[in-house]
Length: 86
Image 1 (spheres, helix red, strand yellow):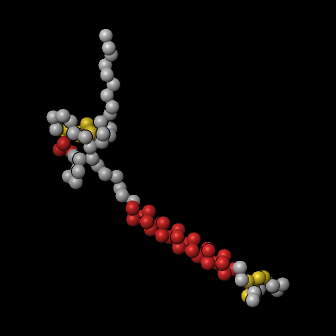
Image 2 (spheres, helix red, strand yellow; image 1 turned 90 degrees about the vertical axis):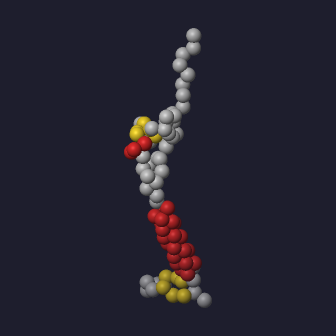
Image 3 (tube, one colour; image 1 turned 60 degrees about the horizontal axis):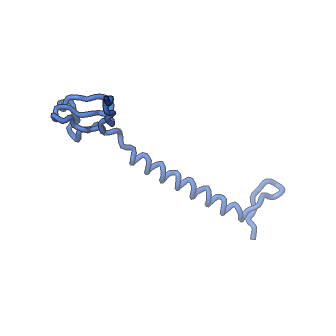
C-alpha cells in the first residue's frame, strides 16, 4: 500500500479548481477578496528609488574620480597651501 502523494504548494495567485478561491502564498482566500488589478497582491515597486540611488552613486563616483584626477596635478607646499605642478 502506498502513502499519500506529496503535492507541491500552489503558486501565489493560483485559483482553486472551482474558481471560488485564490492562493495568496499563505492561505486560500475567497475571490471576493482578490485585488481588482490582478489576483495576487503585488508588493511595492521600488524601481524609481533604485534608479535614483544608482544615478546618485554614479554622480558621487564621478566627483571622486574628478577630485582624484585633479589632485594629481597639485602638491602641498611647506606652508600648508596647495600649488599646481607644471
